[in-house]
Image (cartoon, rainbow, N blue to C red; front, top):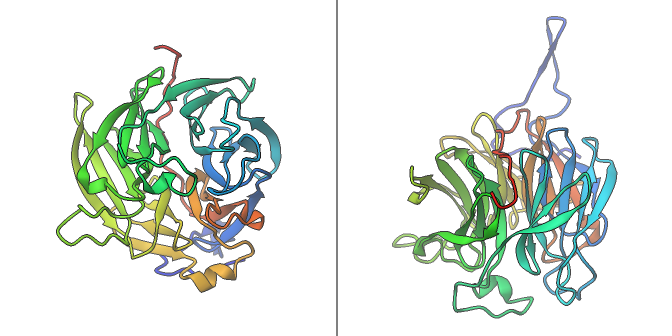
Length: 360
């Protein structure tokens, strides 16, 4: 189903035989890419160089434990081809896979919440190993399902590799960014700042260029400015100094109230495609920091979709489309467990995928 595009930046066109043909899809047209089996709640997503799509799963924050997470593999056409059962998860907490990334060998790196770690998964052999671990650094943490996110418990959420093989991981609960050294090991607190202290903090993360990180702040922190709008989200940029330490934190863009930013992906053009969990839409922000597209335009239009957005979470490019996971964290609706296909009409900026060797 095609929903109306607000503030559309245009659509793609094809040229054949010297004549311009109507585009097959309008810009930001939304379709269903694939269904996601149990345990559902798809959040993390990554697309391999050969077009294989990997999707991670977890569960509702108050559901009884129903077994381990799975990572599902799909063809570029959305056909499910393989599943990987995650090993070593806490059976009393259930499924908990969040963000996904890949290295230059195609190994998948999955953030796990139960326990808090990064898993390295070889998709060819299915072999799994722990790559990194995290620790509690804030004093206020109540480790109960409904309170973990709002009491500064360690909740690693988004991850991205840097060009040197370092892995940068956001912590949405503790409001900080971790750095895992090349080869893995214990994560170190790399960046913290009172401005990103929030009940829902740092989330999606990606490199703008080799010296600049961008990350999403789900809800603006109460200490970010003299009169902060704590009902908005922000995109921040963060410089990386030559010695590898964090530099200046800058606000790149601030959302509308109650957008609830989650993950995002950056196009070759510099356009940023963002999953808005609370607004239930995909928003596009230009390299100049201006909103240029939003679909669905509002919550009513969202309900008219074949499968409405239900806490959309992570975004990854597949050719000239972006794939968006439909998390359904709060409602836990099985009919929402899909990956959406949103037409971008442009390709994604290549991610850093360094060659990683254990213990390097």
